[in-house]
Image 1 (spheres, rainbow, N blue to C red):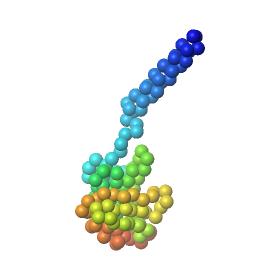
Image 2 (tube, one colour):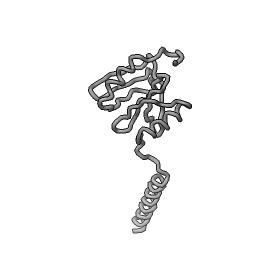
Image 3 (cartoon, rainbow, N blue to C red):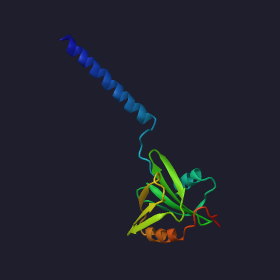
Length: 142
C-alpha cells in the first residue's frame, strides 16, 4: 500500500511541475502564433532586417505569414517567419516565382531560406510581374 502512495505523490509532483512550466511559458508569451499584423508591422520588420529599407509598396499574405515589399530604389524584399523569428531577403535574379491564381510561391535560391507560398489575392499577378525585373546578383540598386 505504501508503494501506491509514493506513486501517487510522484504523479502529483510531476503534474504540478508540468502545469507550472505551462504557466511560465504562457506568462513569458512563448510559443505564440507569430503573424504580420498590418502594413505598419511589416514596415517595422523590414527596417529591422535591413536598416534603412523604407517600403513604398507592399503586399501582405492574407494569413500574415509573410510579405513582399518594394522600396523607392526598386529593391524587393521577401519577409517571412523562420521559427520564432522573422527573416528577410532582398530578391535578385536567383529568385524563382510561380503564380497560381491568388497565390505566389517564391524561392530565393538559398536552401536555408526555403520557399514560401503567399496568398496575396489580386495583387499576386502584379507582384509576379515585378519579380521578372529583378537586379543581377551583386548589382547596385539604382
